[in-house]
Image 1 (cartoon, rainbow, N blue to C red):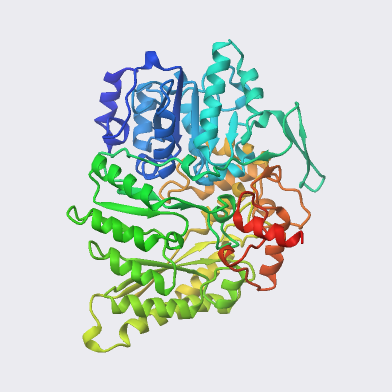
Image 2: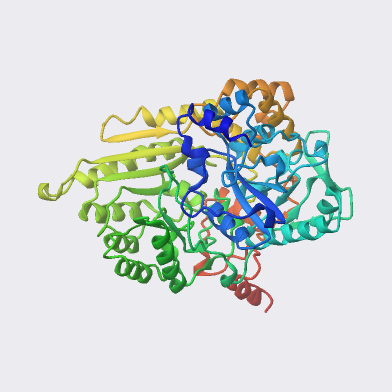
Length: 616
């Protein structure tokens, strides 16, 4: 790496701290002592990637092995990319400024479908061939993370996918590589050997076969490899890695705080939520371990806020005890606590009373839908009564700013469900002001935000059709035009991006040609409104024949073969079908903690109880 060129580029960009490394907590190793060199790539800007807990965990896990060096690389912001291309600076790692084409592995984490174009752009910036079949040397390109569960849109570009939790399987993969590298084995030999590791999917050994109507007929294996890929999960809590420390950026990031992962999984079974299905079963961490971890992170980072992270943090059974102990432990240092997800019941008010002693923040509730009827369809087990009770309690405690999250375009949605968004927003406002005057304090606002529903794989809604852009807009305007009070703010997501997301979220291998054409047309940072260009996407779709009508707006037959059916997430497709049918009938399925619902996940005590009852 020519550091003089890099210095010149950094003087020209908005935030040079994104590209220099050297932060507190970053790990330095002697490259001469390393046998496997791994670049962890986040296909978005530095501030987004450094807020991701998975990066912090895997960075620490891999670097604990003396033979492995894991460094970081992020998508350069357009101003930096312009300078890099102008000055012939290749994509490089933060820690040692090593060009990425000199690594053994380049591993992308897949968090969002609209970051896929950044992956192709980063490969190009690294001087690597875009298509996997054209790469005869250079790093093995790996991808993992939640969006890897629908891998086919990227199958032509990625050498292998890691499906499931990464702490164990990444080490197994890199140890295999170290062994085969010492034996002088080829790239192809390694990729074939990797298929024997549970959770590894190598696309080049598989082929999709389609029917005349364009739907998938079946998949063929092109070598003796597994027909079904089973996700990796960690069953034993002691094996679940924790972040004993964190890298502390020089600049503010999206989540600029210490993070404690309370547990993995979720038991609520919301039918739109992919994470609630793919991360099963629920596994809670020991509060004593979390307390020790919190002390390590605060001492190492100097952060003054701890985020208690999970899919539904209020479900952590020893939560109140943990909060009390954390508040006591950090009382002198005034360390604040935050919960990214709150449950609408009486319990969360007790939690709020405790954490507000250090810092009071705005509150966000997610009713998701405007009526109890539609919430039953999506299995969001929250009622209007729950929201009313919660708001009364928080207003009594002095909160005056509330955010409400909804989705529009949900299955079976009616006009009255849209009206319900307005009515709930007005009801929250009225609850604040219809109190004794002496109790009304602060400048009240309620912000209601609506995202556009995107059907996801491995959910009960993987069969449903997504609304078209114009329908989304009609629904958003229907809500917006009814809101006259400036104390109620309504915001909605751009439906154009949601349609594009849906195409990739349920895409097969043919959608790879759409991604490649988008890359050729200069698409990047498509998840950012400033850079997403709908015209570019429409042009690429027209030229490649990839139609939203087929991938996003088409209702699927219950017997249709999906391009992700070869992946075993533990939750059975029969269970998802049952949940889909219950949704269409407006029937709820209650929390797994109240009794097993028979989803099929292994090593779950609730499933074991259910199986025992079924066999009697």
